[in-house]
Length: 333
Ligand SMILES: NC(=O)c1ccc[n+]([C@@H]2O[C@H](COP(=O)([O-])OP(=O)(O)OC[C@H]3O[C@@H](n4cnc5c(N)ncnc54)[C@H](OP(=O)(O)O)[C@@H]3O)[C@@H](O)[C@H]2O)c1
Image (tube, rainbow, N blue to C red):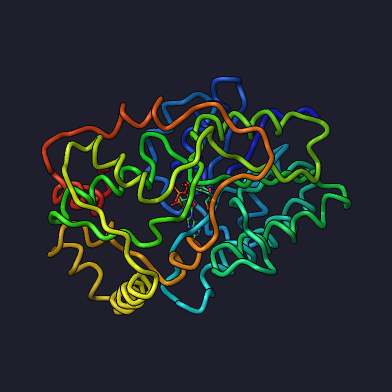
């Protein structure tokens, strides 16, 4: 299939930025649809990149931006949903893919890549996050027999500069006192490098036999949550005693976090007053997602390990976390 122009939903995020820069390097034109194009202007230094502002839940707007592209990549995903009943997860992970596939049909776009998550299962997953990701993925795959080539990517946690895992935990560890409680300390992950994720997506984008594939993506090693926290603390140059929190306590903490976040005024106030409050957000749905290990069963692991990359961006340095959160607020992160 000849692909020269691609539209990417969520293309200005963590994974999207790496993917877009790799696509630019091989001469592919990318159109990123974003809610806040002005925040992502730095991507415009790349050749053949355009960023347009649109509400992707508006079918006509979404469809308009697909009229001249050869492929679509959907990277939209959320980890937290203030609605608590999963409505936000369903909108982002199920309703949006449904709209997107209709827009592809209308515009005769014949290639669609979807970002899902490892071990998501619509029937058995315990969290809204995992179930909705799987449902969205399953819906799209119906169309792989109806003229659209669909490939889904199912990564474990993704790391790299700007990630929301090591960076977040490094900030959190630095502001917690000597003892740091770890919920679901035994949960396992096989972190995969963002560059390897983008390479795999690009490889499959151009492959003629990728239709219907669901590609699991894991790094070369697996670690428990406790091991990853200890590793992050060591790199961050802080000494903390980590204690595994029993599930019942973790869940109580998660309920309190959900309650605090359900009151609109509380979150910004607490973010301002308590350094690390945002980073400590841990919802009941997050807890349930952690009941499923995020490790691969069979597929060949991607090559880059956390030890190759993470020490380059998580280092012992002065604690500017209060300023970091301010910078995030005014979007200068
Ligand atoms: N990072 C990981 O460890 C990881 C692991 C497994 C799977 N994934 C999946 O990989 C994908 C990309 O992850 P990422 O880490 O790059 O996420 P990210 O940095 O948060 O980027 C996702 C982008 O999606 C858009 N978006 C988010 N919520 C939206 C909403 N409600 N409506 C419309 N647009 C929305 C945002 O774009 P704008 O703000 O520009 O509109 C955002 O930049 C997601 O589907 C995620 O679930 C990530």
